Length: 204
Image (tube, rainbow, N blue to C red):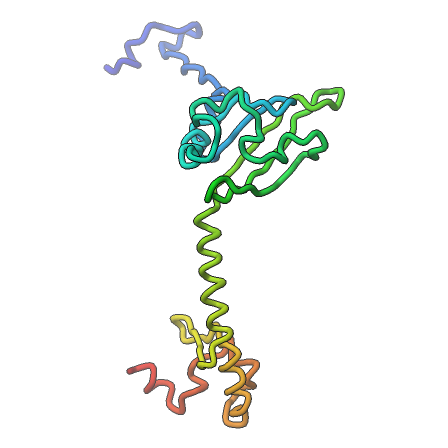
């Protein structure tokens, strides 16, 4: 017999134990486990809580903030940006800030009492430096291709043309009478439009 079978009779005489009552997770324990960086502050913009993800994120900014990441509670939200302690700050608020060489994006929402007075502020933030660097690199490469005098085209794995630079468009416009589509319609067409025997070219 299993332990369940030999358990003392419960209040209902069934001989089975009642399932244990699950205790709901506290709001703080949920925030502790979140990968999202969360900061809570009171109405005076004084930080009352920073979850582990926030503290860990601040370690990467430690050289540029005036307080140790483990001791941000008790400081003000201007740790992130002077704008966040302005009296006329309208919530919800989304913004960006630069701390040292890091680019941040943040969002703030307010909690209000029944009287409409602000009681607390919740803030989420992320370091978007790497994303911005990727975007800048893409913009740089795109600019190079757009301004290159060399004809350039890209196609996906299905041989569908996804991009051609202005030099290509200019060249194909001059050759348009020899193409099965207009030069302006080349993007979205198959590379097969340039081959008299597409099957042969695909087999190479």
